Length: 324
Image 1 (tube, rainbow, N blue to C red):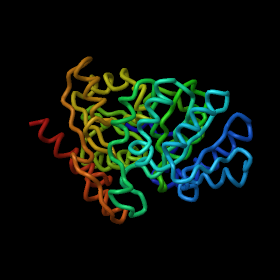
Image 2 (image 1 turned 135 degrees about the vertical axis):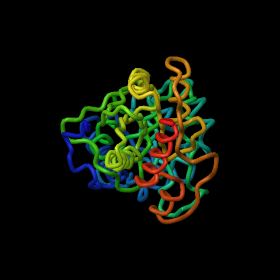
Image 3 (image 1 turned 90 degrees about the horizontal axis):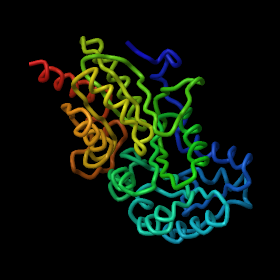
């Protein structure tokens, strides 16, 4: 049984999340004069350029100097501003990691790190510009909140929650259009993972834009007689442990699906929770200890088993083995 009554046409694609982020941060800055935006010379890709047009006096172009940008953001936060630092996920999680750790996470300063080009679909930039281990890195960082929105409705609300949070936040911003999951009545809350579909055969747990593909996979599975529960995890840290335990209790079989490495990401987090609170079989679908590569979006999703059809076929095989 589906819990998607608010948005029956969820197979439709919404606006690219980077565009939604760009317009949303402009709107928030119109309400809050403390918000400033720092850009590491990728504004036309992350859509930070929209902020430059709307609030040029609070737009700080930092050049290709991500480490310095994080230091400046920390300094601004220390004197009362709410800085939003934008760059690609690979540069934040790798190049500027030491500055994030020492200057932002250790001090618990309210810097909001909004990273574009997450996951595999990065405009055919290839493995140099893809990062499939950023969730692993950031969720292990003390004091860091990690948010991975699925669609435009959730992106707007997640950004507001990030700005309101009194501490550092790592917000993943997808480059591409995503499946519409939520309707106007949805309310995002930090640390809450909503159940989008109820079922008894298997629990499918995903985050970010992958959730939309998982919902489509669940419909395919339903046509094959498999009743899947779907849980969306927009806040990977803090994690909604109760929703995960409840899903495991209801189904006895959990499959995590993420556009990210299965090592230390969402799948690792779910496995940690269940090993401690309700030992349950967990299968992790995602990148299996490999880097990504350049290619068309559909081809990448198909190759790494993340398209709705590939997710459905893998889950069907898992359920069949479990029944035997």
